[in-house]
Image 1: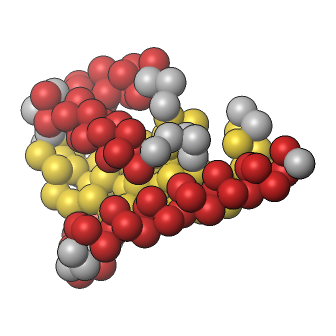
Image 2: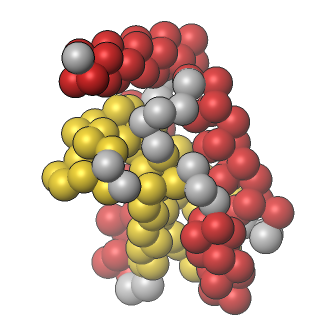
Length: 140
């Protein structure tokens, strides 16, 4: 079992419920291929450095997990065919130094996710509403 990190960027045009179901599907892909999710870190809606498919913003989500290396190709294949994802990146932690850094990142993410789930969902809904207002203003 190796240590991995995936950063996925979900389309901002989805509702909060659709974003949560998309992230649950992503996590299910990892667990169905024999992975064990250590923790996740919802970074929220952020402005992209450059437009991707005419989207200026995206919902960032990081997943830390361990899995056999053979399953990574299937996970990335499933990410590529998922139309709700703008981008994804898979990072492998190999050496002892990298694994120690991965462990620190997991601990930091666990401390950051102590906020109740309801507050996170409310923040996601507010961010989605802000994007909708910006889109309406841009259309006018």
